[in-house]
Image 1 (cartoon, rainbow, N blue to C red):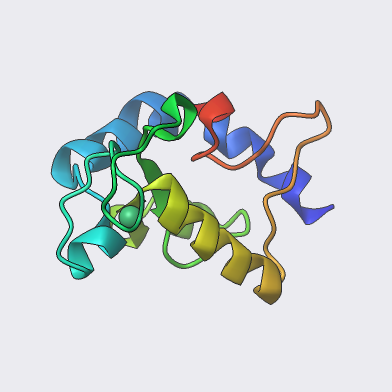
Image 2: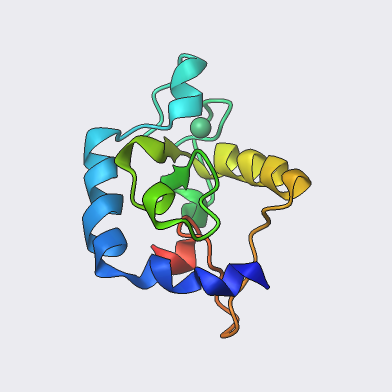
Length: 119
Ligand SMILES: [Zn+2]
Protein backbone atom coordinates (compact mmCIF):
# COMPACT_ATOMS: atom_id res chain seq x y z
CA UNK A 1 0.00 0.00 0.00
CA UNK A 2 1.28 3.39 -0.92
CA UNK A 3 -0.14 4.80 2.31
CA UNK A 4 2.36 2.97 4.45
CA UNK A 5 5.20 4.74 2.77
CA UNK A 6 4.10 8.06 4.24
CA UNK A 7 2.43 6.94 7.43
CA UNK A 8 5.44 8.02 9.44
CA UNK A 9 5.17 11.63 8.29
CA UNK A 10 2.25 12.30 10.62
CA UNK A 11 4.25 11.20 13.61
CA UNK A 12 7.03 13.63 12.91
CA UNK A 13 7.41 16.38 15.48
CA UNK A 14 7.74 18.80 12.57
CA UNK A 15 4.10 18.03 11.79
CA UNK A 16 2.55 17.22 15.15
CA UNK A 17 4.06 20.03 17.18
CA UNK A 18 5.23 22.24 14.33
CA UNK A 19 3.31 22.76 11.13
CA UNK A 20 -0.09 21.50 12.31
CA UNK A 21 -0.51 23.73 15.39
CA UNK A 22 1.14 26.62 13.54
CA UNK A 23 -1.46 26.31 10.80
CA UNK A 24 -4.32 26.21 13.31
CA UNK A 25 -3.04 29.42 14.87
CA UNK A 26 -2.97 31.03 11.46
CA UNK A 27 -6.34 29.66 10.33
CA UNK A 28 -8.46 28.87 13.42
CA UNK A 29 -11.77 28.37 11.59
CA UNK A 30 -13.04 25.89 8.98
CA UNK A 31 -12.24 27.28 5.54
CA UNK A 32 -15.23 25.62 3.84
CA UNK A 33 -17.66 26.88 6.51
CA UNK A 34 -16.18 30.37 6.20
CA UNK A 35 -16.96 30.30 2.47
CA UNK A 36 -20.59 29.68 3.47
CA UNK A 37 -20.47 32.54 5.95
CA UNK A 38 -20.20 30.32 9.04
CA UNK A 39 -17.50 30.94 11.63
CA UNK A 40 -16.70 27.42 12.83
CA UNK A 41 -13.92 26.94 15.36
CA UNK A 42 -14.74 23.25 15.60
CA UNK A 43 -17.91 23.60 17.68
CA UNK A 44 -20.41 23.54 14.81
CA UNK A 45 -21.62 21.20 12.11
CA UNK A 46 -21.06 22.12 8.47
CA UNK A 47 -24.57 23.62 8.40
CA UNK A 48 -23.81 25.89 11.33
CA UNK A 49 -25.74 24.00 14.01
CA UNK A 50 -24.13 23.24 17.34
CA UNK A 51 -22.06 20.09 17.13
CA UNK A 52 -23.49 17.70 19.72
CA UNK A 53 -20.98 14.92 19.23
CA UNK A 54 -17.96 15.82 21.39
CA UNK A 55 -15.78 13.52 19.30
CA UNK A 56 -16.44 15.74 16.30
CA UNK A 57 -15.59 19.00 18.05
CA UNK A 58 -12.21 19.64 16.52
CA UNK A 59 -10.61 21.13 13.46
CA UNK A 60 -8.70 19.15 10.90
CA UNK A 61 -5.63 20.37 9.06
CA UNK A 62 -6.03 19.09 5.53
CA UNK A 63 -3.59 18.90 2.63
CA UNK A 64 -5.23 20.69 -0.27
CA UNK A 65 -3.18 18.83 -2.83
CA UNK A 66 -2.84 15.21 -1.69
CA UNK A 67 0.82 14.80 -0.88
CA UNK A 68 1.07 11.01 -1.32
CA UNK A 69 4.29 11.05 0.59
CA UNK A 70 5.78 14.00 -1.27
CA UNK A 71 7.73 15.85 1.43
CA UNK A 72 7.51 19.21 -0.29
CA UNK A 73 3.71 19.00 -0.50
CA UNK A 74 3.43 17.55 2.98
CA UNK A 75 5.42 20.30 4.66
CA UNK A 76 4.26 23.17 2.43
CA UNK A 77 2.36 25.61 4.69
CA UNK A 78 0.55 26.92 1.61
CA UNK A 79 -0.85 23.46 0.92
CA UNK A 80 -2.82 23.34 4.19
CA UNK A 81 -6.40 24.26 4.98
CA UNK A 82 -8.43 24.06 8.16
CA UNK A 83 -11.63 22.02 7.90
CA UNK A 84 -14.32 20.95 10.35
CA UNK A 85 -14.94 17.18 10.56
CA UNK A 86 -18.04 17.41 8.33
CA UNK A 87 -16.24 19.26 5.59
CA UNK A 88 -13.20 17.10 6.03
CA UNK A 89 -15.30 13.95 5.59
CA UNK A 90 -16.79 15.33 2.41
CA UNK A 91 -13.35 16.24 1.23
CA UNK A 92 -12.15 12.77 2.11
CA UNK A 93 -14.97 11.16 0.19
CA UNK A 94 -13.96 13.17 -2.81
CA UNK A 95 -10.40 12.07 -2.24
CA UNK A 96 -11.53 8.47 -2.07
CA UNK A 97 -13.24 8.86 -5.40
CA UNK A 98 -9.91 10.11 -6.68
CA UNK A 99 -8.14 7.23 -5.08
CA UNK A 100 -6.71 8.74 -1.90
CA UNK A 101 -8.62 7.11 0.89
CA UNK A 102 -8.21 7.35 4.62
CA UNK A 103 -6.19 4.20 4.96
CA UNK A 104 -4.84 2.78 8.15
CA UNK A 105 -1.22 1.97 8.61
CA UNK A 106 0.20 -1.45 9.31
CA UNK A 107 -0.38 -0.88 13.03
CA UNK A 108 -4.09 -0.32 12.48
CA UNK A 109 -3.98 3.39 13.20
CA UNK A 110 -5.52 5.84 10.74
CA UNK A 111 -2.80 7.60 8.83
CA UNK A 112 -5.01 10.63 8.39
CA UNK A 113 -3.57 13.52 10.42
CA UNK A 114 -7.07 14.89 10.97
CA UNK A 115 -8.37 11.71 12.49
CA UNK A 116 -9.02 12.22 16.22
CA UNK A 117 -6.62 9.39 16.96
CA UNK A 118 -3.79 11.40 15.40
CA UNK A 119 -4.48 14.75 16.92
ZN1 LIG B 1 -16.75 23.28 7.91
